[in-house]
Length: 238
Ligand code: 6PG
Image 1 (cartoon, protein in one colour):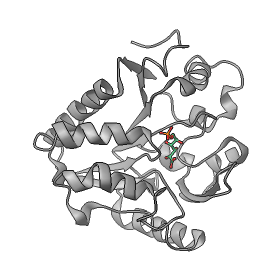
Image 2 (tube, helix red, strand yellow; image 1 turned 180 degrees about the vertical axis):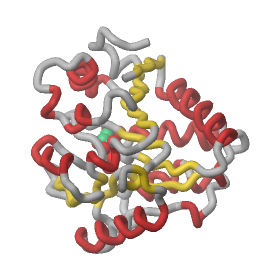
Image 3 (cartoon, protein in one colour; image 1 turned 45 degrees about the vertical axis):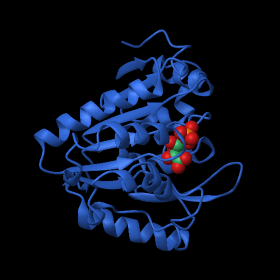
Image 4 (cartoon, helix red, strand yellow; image 1 turned 60 degrees about the vertical axis):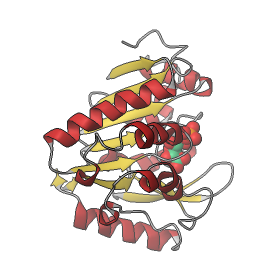
């Protein structure tokens, strides 16, 4: 596991943007799964404003690690957030965007996304293989849409599952642990002081860290990109 700590979200975003420049220079095609929530907004804004011409956007196929079961124009849609902060400002190819169809019933959305993964992703170990898996982490240690109260979903034999937000009851489609850990590279983008306790427990393998889905992500493949606020409790970090 590698950690990099940044002074600000913007500095973290520039590091990530530089990585994407290199990745899209060296590879004709990148399959990338995006995280949702609010953390990516600032990161996507920096990429839109400062990396519009330097990243070979047409070489990236975009997927998501999870999506809320809401229509694509809903305020809580991860697709809408990504469109507003990234796709509307960069030369991404529309045909390279593979959203989870939150407007369908959860069962239909899960089946549809599994079909997309089957059709679009190269297979390694008999599983879809993403080149880059972006993950966030909730204050409770969830990642994608696998929450602590449903941590059994992490080990599901399925490629996608239906998760339930513990407070709102909102249904969400999520990749499972076997697909997430089958990725070539995994990057956690975690910022803000509210994340610091769980970051500390997971990075330092303390407390009840294994009860957090984010701790189940393959440590050898994981790069944790943190701002100073999220890292403030952690002894580790480069
Ligand atoms: C989602 C996510 C989820 C998110 C964390 C962190 O759909 O909400 O993919 O896993 O990454 O909840 O969310 P914030 O960035 O809003 O703190």
